[in-house]
Length: 290
Image (cartoon, helix red, strand yellow):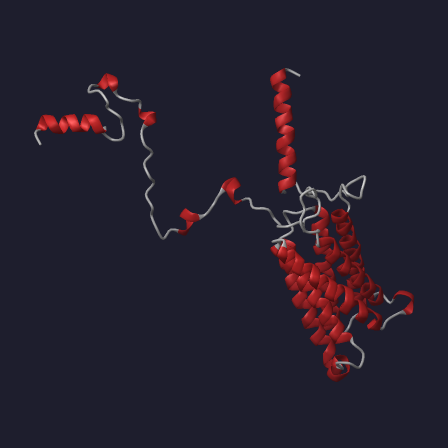
């Protein structure tokens, strides 16, 4: 191909992404119509595949285990299982915490065995499995785990059945302390995952975490009455907060004239949406000269 023919071919096909339908600089298409260059793939660089900014702001909780979001119930296919699990946890924790406080002279935990197996254990475990069905990893992990916790407590405290307390004798206090400290660690992990939720939801896990810590230390240090009673106080607070969050999940437009205030953290998704809405309204008023 001659030099003139090569030049004509380049003019027809375009050079560097420009369309030169007619030869000459006056006919050149402006640069902003040029094809975008594909960025170089460095490969092997993990930072190149990390989402940043708003794209990385995933919901803190799937499903509806985050009370206060008030999702529409019009197209709901499954009921919200979170209030059921929270209520099961609350009642069982309430009863055992009263016993830890020696309320009305009751010190033996026999009565909590039935609640631990039936309500706090089985029902809460089932609620956790339904959280799994609606795609809520946090809800499934929390409710199923605490359901297992109450079943385990029921096994430990069953009088005469498994004979765990009587067989271990003096070693029971330290062993039960190990058990409770493990749950303190697990609850701390969940607590960190509530920082983008609501204040009411965070306080539930915060008080529960302190209850496990006080009770664990109480049993590790020779069943100290003061620490065990402190655990009972925090357990009662956790029980009432669990009921409060359950009410926030139950009370919706189908059965309530009001919603339960749960207080959103300033950095939560709900608070950010509210702030963006307010800023948008202020911007519109400014444009209108209001």
